[in-house]
Image (cartoon, rainbow over all chains, first blue to last red; front, side, top):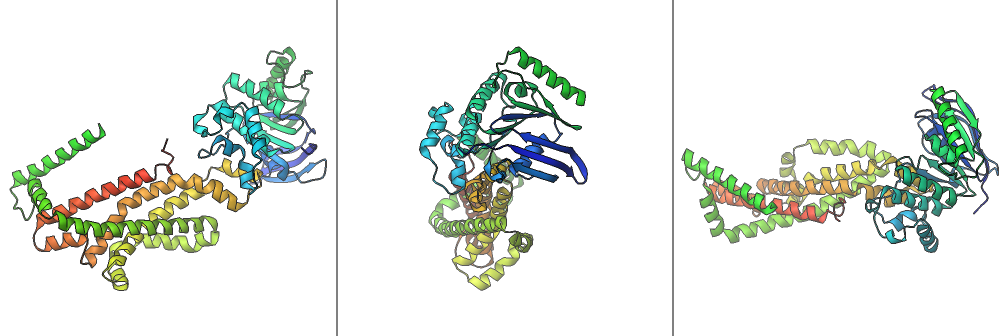
Length: 241
Length: 244
């Protein structure tokens, strides 16, 4: 894997002249998990989509740069709340979708290794409709890893899961995406406190950086400092509203 | 259970039919009863079978051509803005024309034989196939397209691997509609000018006041259409995502 770069996005976004978010500057540390926490409608998903080079419906004035001066949008892998698995394709086909879309021959060995790592080896030939929500999200994570990109953008990928599955997925993702520059957009203070190596709260007023707990991520769900951070983040969110 | 309820519905319809005949006492050249129609059908079964075969051939060829044409048109429309601007209004306009009005023209151009009826069937199903598949192609869930974008997919690959498979259920519903419409198109073609087919037989029987034979031909057409619909339904189950 190519070493992951630092990533900086700075600028303003407007929708038909009305500001969506105030001038902001957000730096994603190289090889780190940055959690962007905020309520609905503050534009956190827009920030992620801008980095991914996706349509946002907003006019963005500013720039998105990587510390190695290379382009950004073609070096990202993207994972959303909706697992976006193609319902007509098998688990294996879904995992290797990227290669097929680029007209490349998928690396079957690598694919199978990732599927095994996600404990999906018994489900290779199944269709997504035959899987549980957690299994589907593991397929989506395997597909994300299959892309092998230095920058990974996660748009609330675990928010539709039940509490236990969500915690399992957080552990799995934290381990699997180690060493990559990760942006996790979330509205869950607990998730940010568990996973963030850098935590940024987004409110209509702008960005506020918060100190992450001292323990290495992923932190235990009952780690006292993590719980304290979770509380502090929630207070920040409520004060801003 | 399904067969049983279908049977019950049939018996009920026949009972109402018979009741109307008995209560009104209409002469049999106005409204023949079910028993007489059944008898006539049996006596003329080989004639009816011959004409059914002709109509069936017209319908099946029409369905095949219409589907291929519709699919190709929808792909063109989905792929090119220019095609949408230039072709789509024309498509809607052709649908606004009554097919009946075109039938004499088609007979004039293509003759009394098979092809003018095939053309009628194609015309009548072309629009439902095209518009349903086109709608499906244009309604690909945005998330899939976003994902494909981050994977640097070419438009061609997105069309082939995502948009077409995602639109197959829409195409399946278009084809199921087409299976019901195609026989109507073929029969209209036969009415306007032909010497064979169920439409021709109906017209002939009507002209000679053989209303019982007309009913027999009409019911045969109905049964044929239902069978065709069921077959197409079965054949498109996988496309529609129903097969398990």
